[in-house]
Image (cartoon, rainbow over all chains, first blue to last red):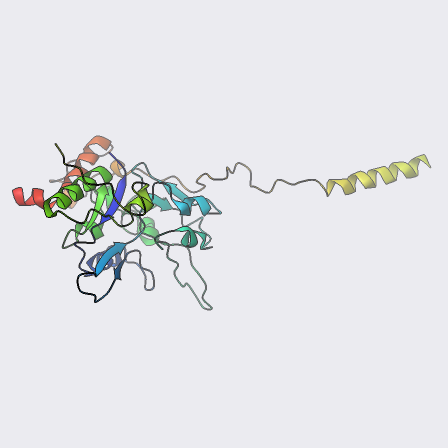
Length: 208
Length: 84
C-alpha cells in the first residue's frame, strides 16, 4: 500500500463545509479549533470562484516534524503524520512551518494562553491505546483502526475531497479528469507530496 | 610556600571546571528522532462488532486490513459505484 494522502478537487468542491462539520462531529473538536476548513478564492466572481478543503496534508517531508524542538512528531507506516500531545509544548513553530496552516492551538485560558497543538490525524488517533478513551480525548476517533477512511472524505457529498491510499485516489482523480476533460491541477499535492511544480499535478495519462 | 601553591593550584583547577562545556541534552535523547510513546498499528485491532459481518480483515493481518481500506477507497469512486 502507498501512503495515505488527501486530494481536493477544486472543480467539484461546492463550499458546503460538510467536511468541516464531519470532522468537528467525529472527533468532538473543541470550540476555536478547526482541523479542517474550506478556503474560497475569487468569491462571487462568476466562473472564477474555486473552493478547496484544507487540513493537514500529511506531507511526505513534513516541515512541522523538522522544526519541532521537542521532536513530538512521528510518521506511521501508512504515511500519516501524527504527534504526541504529552510532549508538545505548544510553542507554535509547527504553525509557522506548515504551508497549509494546519496546526491549531486551543486558547486554553486567560491572557491568550496557548494550549497544545491539535491537528488533523487522518482519523488515525495518536500514541495512546487504539480506540481507548484517552486516545479519543486527546486525538479523536481512530477510524483507520476500525477499517475506515477519514470521515471528511468519506462523507463528502460531491466527492471533491478524496482521502486514502495515494495510488488509488490518484487513479480516481485521473479517471475523473479524463472524463470531464479539464481540471488536472491538484491544489497542494506538489507542496505536500513533492510531485509536480507549485501544486500542479502531473499531466493525466491514459490508463491501459 | 609549597602548601600555599598547592592550594592555589587546586582552586584554579576547580575554577577551570566552570569553563567546561556541559552536555545539555537529556541522556539517551537523539535529536531529530521521535521522543514520544510508541503507537499501535491499525491492523492490530479487531473489526468493530457492529460491522464485523461486512469487515474484510482479521485482527493482526495487515494484508486483509489493506483490502478493507482499498474497498473503502473504491467507495469514493462514483464511476465504479454507478457500475455496481
